[in-house]
Amino acid sequence: MYVCIGFFVLALTLGVLSGCSGTGVLNALNRADHYQTAKGIAYGPHERQRLDIYRPRESANACVIVFVYGGSWDSGAKQQYGFVAAALARRGYTVVVPDYRLYPEVTHPTFVADVAKAVASEPVQQLIADKTLVMMGHSAGAMIAGLISYDVKYLQAVGLNPDIIAAYVSLAGPHDYFLPTQNPRWANIFGDDEAEQVAALTVNHIRATNPPTLILHGASDETVTPKSAVSLEQKLKTAGVSVTRKTYPEVTHVKILAAMGRPLGFLAPTLDDVDEFLQMRCNGASVGSHAH
Image (cartoon, rainbow, N blue to C red; front, side, top):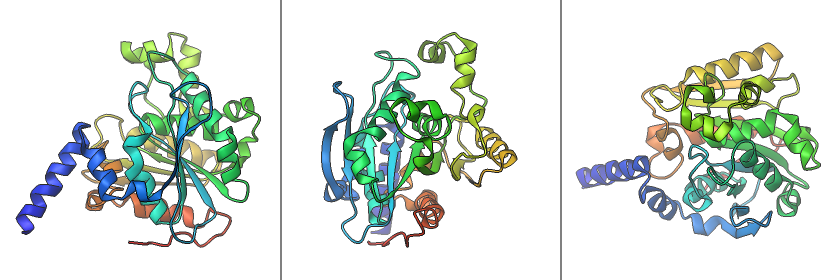
């Protein structure tokens, strides 16, 4: 029996890592549809400008998390990440997962502007009317969420005060040591203007009023170098911003996110660390029902 379970978990992990039906299996195992209370809400006219909302079934805390998925800015869909939202909803969080337009239809910074527009949409603003807003993202989504959290122009462009963001969580985010000139494909997405490329780096938007930040990264991440996380932490500390960084041994770029879903929590303590970080940053609320 235990051998069968081991093989199942291994197969599921490989499925997630290969981008096949793994996320669909994780969504089912984590009962994503049980927590999804709204699907495909429009925040703009484009078919990619839609968002899903997940709510806890028990007592909610005072945080709303906008989770931005990755996919190298040219792939991904909100329905693939229900397992992440469900995991957070079990801990008492309301979670918004927006789609956004992708390359080659759009280039930087349009996808960042899309997520900012989602944050400014009436459904999300209603959710955070009496709650605290947290931006969170994985990989390319961590960069998008980071720019919205740190670069004031994105929220100001949609009529919001940048200070509405109470915390930012980065999972395997490319914040430094990433210049589009180093890769022709990236140059197509981010353009050949060096000033714009530099402006796309999260580390170049550090100010003392940045929100408290949690940086989680895998030591075995070969997609986004762990030194990017170290650089962001150092710059935030220099600016006097509250920051926590954790690096997980033998954890890769995708495992750090897959670990949030049942039964892959053994891969990394991602969910516990996110929950712990946010507990004291949600208007002092007691966070997390820890329902099973």
